[in-house]
Length: 71
Image (tube, rainbow, N blue to C red):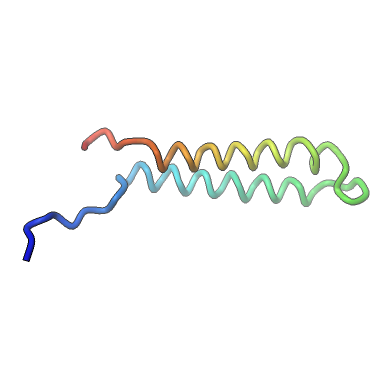
């Protein structure tokens, strides 16, 4: 048997930031569905929704790559 500690790979702050990123991604997709233009070719479907979604993915990458302060 080995004496290694069984720790989670991320800290609580990382998981919290990941949940925030998922919420932002879902908000971006929800914004895209609110576009009233035909086939989603309005401002919400082509500009605001994708920008919010990309921001959510950036938050996710940052949450995964960020090193916890206590390690």
